[in-house]
Length: 311
Length: 311
Image 1 (cartoon, each protein chain N blue to C red):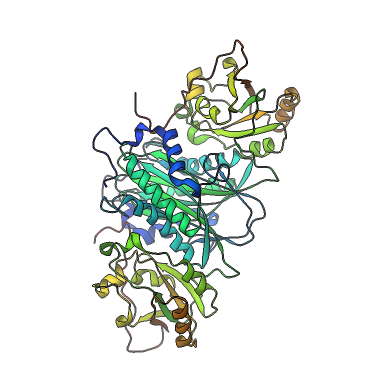
Image 2 (image 1 turned 180 degrees about the vertical axis):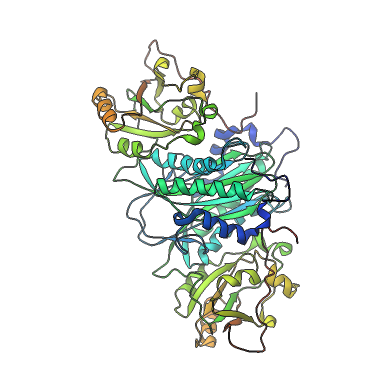
């Protein structure tokens, strides 16, 4: 469904701001608590928390993160799941979200309804309350920005820093072809996997793969090291080239580093018992920059870089 | 300064995403803590909090909340202050914010620099840490969405609900003409005033005036009551008509209700001692719907309604 109506019917401006907010509350149903815990006051009021908190924000933009071929319910799901993937990448648990909508006045009400139903279904599935937001008019665009607040699960928050020379590089799932396969909106954020990994002391650092392995890996690489990858080991989605697996992005898989000296067979066995359908693959290792060797010097940075002009 | 470059120079796409994020961290300076407390990891990691938390989100959109005549530093300040006003409206204290930027690749770097410097200066002033965000490309637009997390100050969070028939209606500052006077970006969010009011038990409910008094007042009005206003008492900005004071919006003043039977003179005296330069004005009262009287039946809803088509 195209999000913008071409005729005079089914346009959001027929509702007005007040009518749209009332409709959104109806569409969200029980995932939106009553004010002031949910939509309806100046802020959402949330209970105190004992754990450290995790805060992240990501939008979906029409023409960039979705187009008219993606069902609106899947767009709503993707909006939340993109952010859930960031919480997963630190081993956390999601709690509450707020959504800011910037939309053209010709946006279809039916599109918005399906979008919010998809968002609410995903929120229910992952135990997230949708506690507030904002709607504003912006000609020609449809952008939904979600901010997600979560918390640490247990004592450990796994950051991007912590890997050392000699550590192994490991990735969940398969990479590449996210856009063409529909994975970019059908994926399951690796929340359970992220919490499991964060509880294991041999995992030293973690992130999610969103801009492509080749680009994202730099964030985990210690300054004294280079990433040496076994290119043949990189788990690719069916029909994907190596370049696609390295550079496509929107994989929403977890990339982590494992302490040198870890019994990888035993780690792998424990993983398979817990997550029998999700691959966990050792794809390389950090080598000290000074060390000589037959491995490629470093990985070419072919990941998706936003906003870069063509050379 | 117009935010979009017309020639090939000073365009953000010359930086690329990575370069822009590096520049943003530099522009934000000390208001952006080091990762994982600030920009640079999948989420920002925040300490646990004992108090209840307040969460709100609001954008600024080029062509709607600002235009090329508003200095970019003032746009950055406005973005944060709009959200601070929501925290003020519940008597809270702000803590941390994340910002999502959706921008055309022709956006001027100089504009973005001044915007972030203005945002950072405002954040410093109000003790807010800028802990994360996102940048994404969206053709033809410039939208910054800020999510602000705050906390309750003391035991009380003042919501919009709580007024009863007979209660007085009170407003801070002056209303109307926000756009033409530049108040919409020069205003001072009423944080100190909001906390002061929330600590006084005679104040029963509160909100900020953003869509205009006439529209916003409905949110405070008890279901069994109607708002009866003394139109002559409404404090107007210099040169403003009554209609402007009632309907313009973007006032960012506090509107609150005071328990029937309160000694208004004593309340007013205490206020003046604490806030000698900010007016606090009693503008009306809630009357029971059944009660007869010479007062106007209800207030015409002439506030600014977003997204409504012209009739």
